[in-house]
Image 1: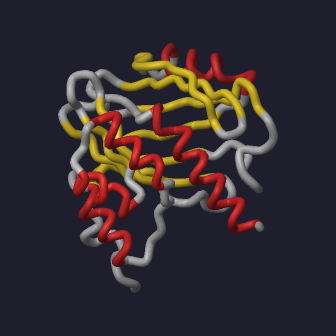
Image 2: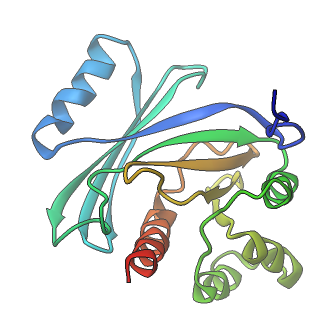
Length: 199
């Protein structure tokens, strides 16, 4: 029997599922999760992706024990990334994302690295201290803050098998979102990684 590779990684639960939907089934899927499974609609939004325009819609139980984030491409120019159709993802929560990032490094795992200009922009947007930003940059951790001061720190693995990737996140101060503003940054990083691998 091999070693337990999750030992010390700090993952405590599944936070949410990210499900990419076909364009013609997006509204139908939302209706199913609300009407049949009783999930409530928690947020919606649209954002520009590297290949076009995306729409997102989130559903959850009142206690946030179950969360789903649905996405669909509204306007599309070419493929999301080489050999990737509509990637799905599973998000795991941790109570200390920096300790988890170090454990991933120690265990030989991989996370997606983010461009330096993203972190330069964080300083202007959120007035973060230089050492805080340096820690985020070192591990490819993305950052978001809501109007009430709640924080979301999250990082991603590469896409595996052309279809699935994993997110690791830490919520602070009751942050209830999914970091939608960071989605284009993550998509661009994934796309760059896939292009590099196929080039």
